[in-house]
Length: 121
Image 1 (tube, rainbow, N blue to C red):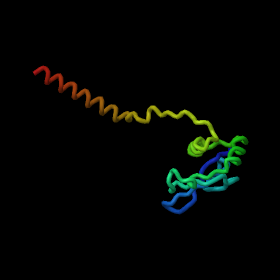
Image 2: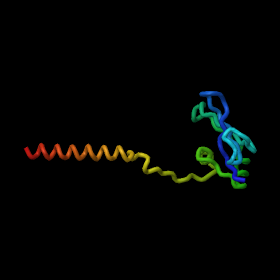
Image 3: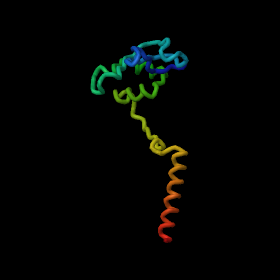
Image 4: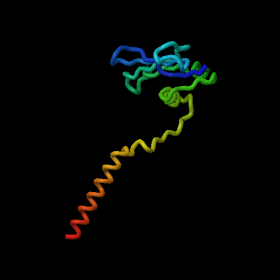
């Protein structure tokens, strides 16, 4: 069975509240889970102790059993010191898209042509 440690959404509309759960990866996000491992309340300030509550002992147990944490949970576990920090670098994030690069190249070409014309006069 492919196990995941992930967030299951609770709370009402526009008031998110998440449970940190160990679940079979084939189950739906808010569906059946095996064990509740903690809570996450994104509405609380970042420095609040109650924002993220985790049962570290049980999380380590599930990690030892082969459960894979999702990206968001692995970041929370890294902040708590349970997992070592992963190197993350999205170097292409700051680059503009293909069409924007084409527009910029066309604009630069047009500006260069105008500069040559002005220099020739």
